[in-house]
Image 1 (cartoon, rainbow over the protein chains, first blue to last red):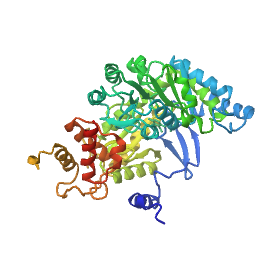
Image 2: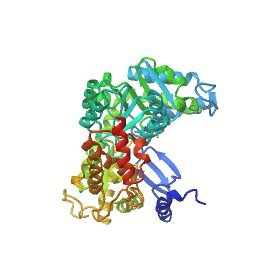
Image 3: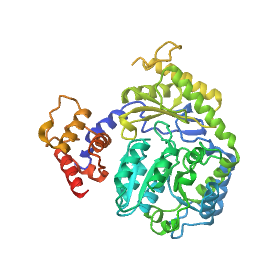
Image 4: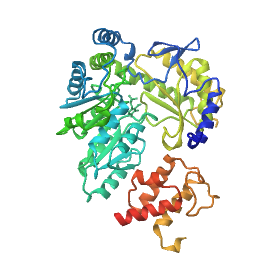
Length: 408
Length: 83
Ligand SMILES: Cc1ncc(COP(=O)(O)O)c(C=O)c1O
């Protein structure tokens, strides 16, 4: 069969991974005990690689709402939002999101991925220009490709480069739509959003911010980077997901743009897929309530993030530029990432291996993320396991006093 | 090459040389992915250098169609003509 020949080299790599005892891309937990612990092959392990930032997957109010909704409304909607799949709960969740963000419009999508597909493919039409940050998530690239706009990218987190590119387009007709993220999922860095907002204003562009990893994480009330940077008025659309800090699945977009509601009958990723089941809608609505009413979760998350970041930096790991809940150690090559990941797992710690093309600049990463549900002791235990494993595989210097670069 | 008075070709070759091993021979027929081993992301990244030098933006769908070094030169020429 020639069908998969195009993936020749990838296949070889994948087979190589499959033959290992643990394959980072094919691991299945036997049980999830809590937001921070799971059972893997009969052993309890500490989770340091989820997106469960606030630990809400197991919040009693959230799970109770999910169970109750399933009992009352059934297991699924069996249809799309524009047919039989819109229930009062979908509408109420949209209202709750709009109220939270203080925006007029909110649309809920079946996944965060689809929210980007649905928004980017529909707001930018033929003759318009989408300008993406180079490190954008796959869903942003795919959403851009699904539409008819011309797509270019600018250097990651570089407002001057964005300005140059908008300058080239200045005399051309069509809307200019800039897309950036709040916290970037691979290195945990944030966008210089104040500067982007300035550029956006200067060139009369539309600004879309994907706050997938920053909702509930940044900002005075948890609305994300736009809130933290004080530029919400300059952000025309905020896209987000329910699958991280809200502990469920699904995506959304909030906006004050005039005419936004027309997307409900033009955005194909919104129209032509089944709506979220009642259990997810109810759980997410409850989770949003918890996110709003318990700011202490965000505080704890931030403390843990700094603790892990300082701990790993102190061991000599080269990390992303900012202490956010995503803490990625930059590995010299994929092999080193696999080796450290495996050693950590054997020690009882689950993290993530991230490789190109998901990562920027061809980097191999050992990615961790903390949760408000972690205890300080768990974070310290994780750092200790990094110390042991990092030395065992020769990535960091043996002496505990080392703060300089690793041995490789 | 520098006296070829062909800034587009010069920019493409210069950017490519900076992104691949220096001992690889380059000509217009060189396949950027298969022969130079550049991934889609790496290609988009080295295109930044060309864009800066020539002060133009190359849309992603046009980059995706490029197979050889010559294709890239032709794409940029076409864009300048359209521009
Ligand atoms: C920046 C960004 N946008 C969108 C998504 C997609 O969200 P989801 O996984 O909920 O579909 C993700 C994560 O997967 C992401 O990191």
